[in-house]
Image 1 (tube, helix red, strand yellow):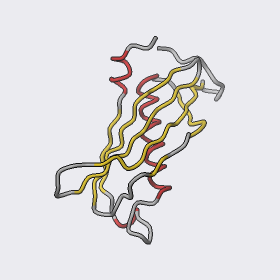
Image 2 (spheres, rainbow, N blue to C red):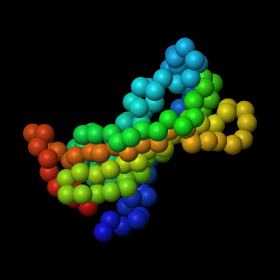
Image 3 (cartoon, one colour):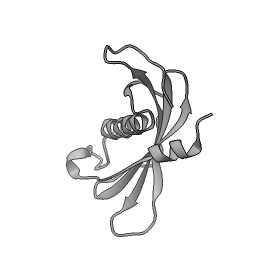
Length: 128
């Protein structure tokens, strides 16, 4: 059983402003850019949890429930949700908020799976 405090200590939050150079012709954040940012946050979360070399091996269903317009702020939040022998899963949520108004909405969520590797890129046990 993984101690809850170890999971909380690896929680990762990153904030970004959505600028026009990251948006599509609808003036909303490119889905691919959002997925790139989510994978980055998931990687940081996995690495902070394990303190080992980690690589992404899959992303599960990613739900885009709200568009993310240019000129907004997004918060990406990553949390470890499962730890196996050599792999772990990180849930990432993306929240959007207007720059000059209160309130926020969850816009995207998805799960990323990572494997711990050694210097030769072979899978190794996650040490907790």
